[in-house]
Length: 169
Image 1 (cartoon, rainbow, N blue to C red):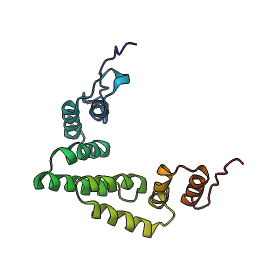
Image 2 (cartoon, rainbow, N blue to C red):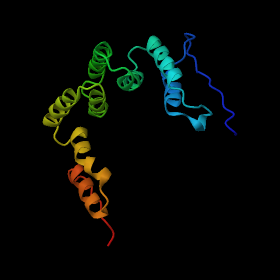
Image 3 (tube, rainbow, N blue to C red):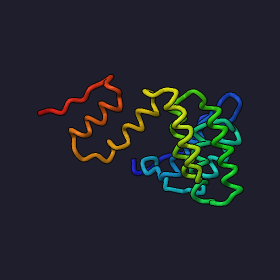
Image 4 (cartoon, one colour):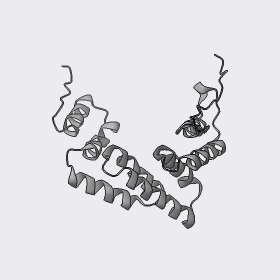
């Protein structure tokens, strides 16, 4: 429609934007939502995340975006400590959910705490050697593999033979 779009929020009965409204707009602005008629605007994206967290301080999606936004822009001890505290909060919120915890290991490395991310990863894999973390670790080589037969072998191993990919002859 020629990028003729509108930015509108859905409001709850409490007259506040519903959880995720500011976060969703922040994602569009952070990445440049050309399909939504929005140009990339990282500064406005940070404002939207701040507004989301003011309304919904435990929104894990907004907390992760907050870390991504600030991890590369502000390399100083004060910011690093704040981001570490945010990651600790996310650890508590995601306790027991491997898929969500998996997203944190990369964020730890972004703030220079890669060893902490590895520690979490190792602990979870030790507790659940055929779980999500273990599967993702096995899949890492797949993303750079050029040979289809080797790629299929990687996927089969990553899913611990619960599925099989067969390469046509």
